[in-house]
Length: 511
Image (tube, rainbow, N blue to C red; front, side, top):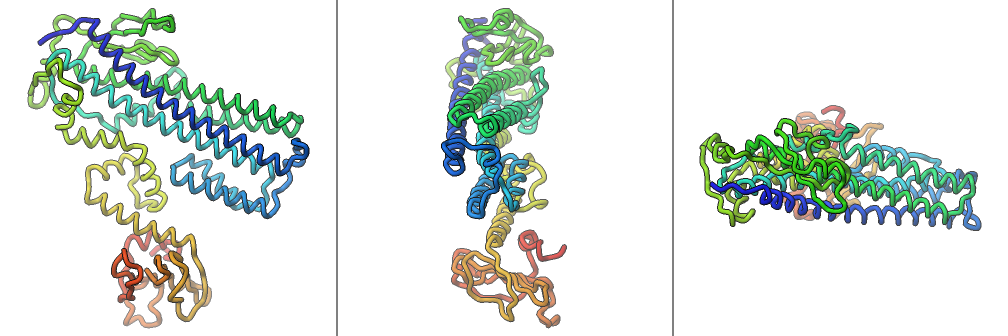
């Protein structure tokens, strides 16, 4: 079994950091683009607002506080509904969604309030995107560097064994535990930056209206505020990348039973004094503390840690303590993909955990939709949802089917008509609903399919014939085939399914 010298470890682990750093820079470029779009949308909203209400390109606070007329209010509410739809589809800030829902019910909204709604939507979008991108980056940086750190060490010692997999619940805790001296996690820093930007933009608008600052000056100041927020986002991306890189290495070193680690600084004319001072110092693993005895030591820190092995350390001892004690030879020219296939992909749980991490963003959006549609019948937590999705195929397929059944009914209810008919209309607008009332009480609900013909009936009475209609309420599913909405026939009474009860709880009174 060979051992490598210090220079070998420094070179390998600096390469890992460079790779993570490049990935973080790509993430920042995406965030930078999102800020540019938000700034452009904000400026366009101000210019459009001024063109409507300002005289000679100036507007007073008195003019800004005037109510929107009916046409303007109607137009704003169309925009608000689009904002709400976007928010629900992208799991955006729930407090802002609630505010939008309140706005949609108002009968009086001022010109100033309307502008702030458009501007706030742009701010919510850009910071929501930033949160998602940094969260995804954190998980990817951790996963990649955990496995690649172990790979480099095993290759350096020419031995290998199957690994403990990355625990996604543990990773959730790592992502959501504060590590810096201010006691805040990155999501909190993002929301603080968001509120600061919103307050600063509002201040500029008030100055424009109260003091008479020209719109050009206000727009110029708003551009500066966006630039400051963008730079804060860049510093946050690079610092969090450094932390999660370091956290992954710490856990990898512990998996390898390394007893000590050494700090290696990237030495050039940009290296900070603290990184110069910490360079080549080594510490026991129990003293590993980011920001104090391990990177990142400051914003945009580029220092890394490497394993520190004394002459008596043997990596084979760690492998021998595994469940089967199997030790494999790892040649010095084995690629990372070859190593990964042998020591990670052969572990089914490792593959499942990797899917959970890689699909977190899309899974979280899916989970939010399921919660919105299914309510209490959705999995209680996101972790429960992913566990079901990747470990219990049968129950997950049942959940998907339930969601699909409830979802089409809820969407159809967005186009609902009420009436009091002796006989419920046979034809109606496609994908709509007719609620039939008698003496002020609802007696039945009919759903229409894609062709405007009946698709589903929910009957709340026995039609005056309890002998023939024993089950109350009951349903009639007209479709013989879900793919053919023309081939219909009203079947006999059937009990309500779980999907029917969820989608129609507004008329079922606890049934």
